[in-house]
Image (cartoon, rainbow, N blue to C red; front, side, top):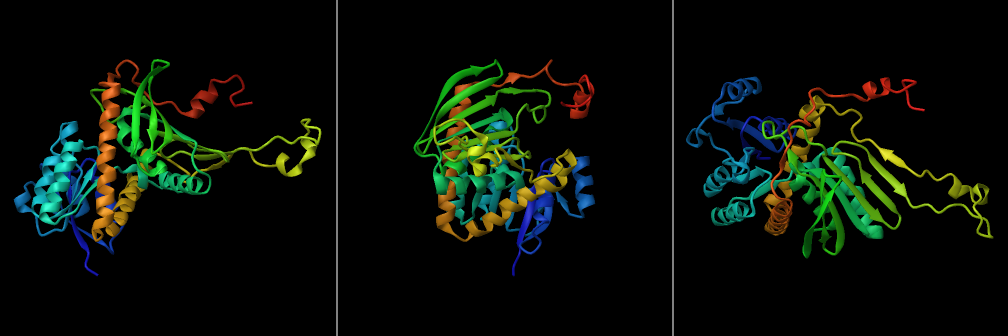
Length: 360
């Protein structure tokens, strides 16, 4: 079987892509890294035993470029780099986010040259979220969805809208309106995707000196159904199922725990921890590479299917439009300065401050 030869562009988050590509050795072969040639880039390439190139002209023969460089809308040249590769007939994976206009140009360039363009919203393939989305799919198919409530920091808005879109089966028709602020921290948006009511709360704050850190919230989602509520507590947190269970009653309608043994013993909260331990090391070495591998494995099916690629392109362009509209409604992010923690706190530290040193 011929393997797809891959070049990874960028070595900051690009190192996660290198690890992800290497999880699929039967389908993908890393042939090099493209970067500006900084000392850390050269050191990383050396550790990975991969050749490092600083210009496109130097690159060896390859089939696909993973462009893990900030796109134009966030001050980088990722979109421009993607179009250059697409013009040469290469397949391109671009890490999110991207402005809709840039995405349109990339899809058009791919159509002209015969390449394939893919936007990776990333988190839909992380192990915990992938499990959550599959559970939500089962709920939707069997019982329908009453509504979706989502909460995230501005850092994760693009990927969060993607997750809600996966749950609702797409966006069109869609609408979003601003609904004010909650407790001075969360910006409230409301609307619907494909007729499903959606509530979205966003912490629109960012540290201008360190924009990638200090996000108050990752991805928190609740899917409401007539049979119960499915909750994602955090990006790599627990999945909790709250079934709708009636209270045991006598034939006269009185509350009585002995009236129905089956109802009396139903677990009112069930939880699943896909990741038993979540640390930065776990994220960098296992969780995030697994998300990249999941995305690359999924796009193998799309690369050879024009219909699947067209469907995903339509979905992604709508996602870009929804994201842009939500951003316009919220306005620019507020600076996060004095609130930035100087050190991290653990649960053990909080418990030590309790009167008995442990919860009652």
